[in-house]
Length: 420
Image (cartoon, rainbow, N blue to C red; front, side):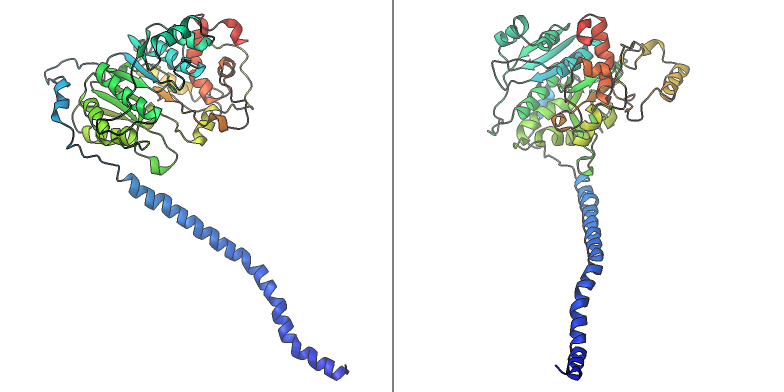
């Protein structure tokens, strides 16, 4: 091609070539800005959904119509008298519910032993009922010839009484109760309504005496639920409930639960109890609602279970048994409830070295509801909770339950050879 034509063609093509070459450069330079814009938009939508939508949800707790609850539920409620000088106490009775997946196997784990033994040590109850659908002969076999040592040790604890019950399968309205957990919900309400006392889930661990709550003058004592997500905030925890026999709350709760049960996970349990407690708290002396740390300082969510159970490998394994007689749970507070003693105890926690940086403070906790359904998902340890795990005292759970296990070792219930 002649030079003049080649030069002319090049000049004519130059704008198009420049345009084609500049497009990829433009996209290359601009995509981070579009990506950042997309990220910010996503974050704004998330914040709006979490705080705007969920707050509106939390501000409107489910409220259940009680017009279907007959006034006859009040027939069993004992009359109250303003002239009473000493308020009636909540009975010192403990209730658990244990339903079997296999009707031929009655087995209780080490963690259940911890709960029951802690109740025995700290509450000193008159009776500890384990309400179960296990046939009496199945329980007898577990005691006499069962291979599981923790089942035998749990049932051998003083005042532990297995109580055979029939789990309900259908409500009065004909709604089938399919889930074992829902059947257990109805049994716990019935037990506390009839006998009074304190109900605890099997994963709830007593950490100190509850007599100040039992003798507070309230007919019912319940606690809030600790949560990590605001959408679950404001509800109570039905894994720990205290009541006098035939209290108004429990009588209405039992009747209403049968009416509103719809098969959903929390309708007739947490949601209904929250609604009734919030409405009956206006009745003097009927309901005391404690904040979450009293009965459930951690939530059921994975991150809280990880914080509770995962051992801190940076903390050396405890080599020796440490006397726990002076722990918050075992301490004789009745003889030490002076201002100076209380201040001394508070300052103990602030001394450098008394607490690890990862350690949780359970000083305001009566009962630790130690949710453990996601423990098997926690990485970084062998997922074994046994005597040696507790004695190592490398996790918050281990440090919380250590005083009770120390007591069991001192009393010879747990042999010394199992601690080595």
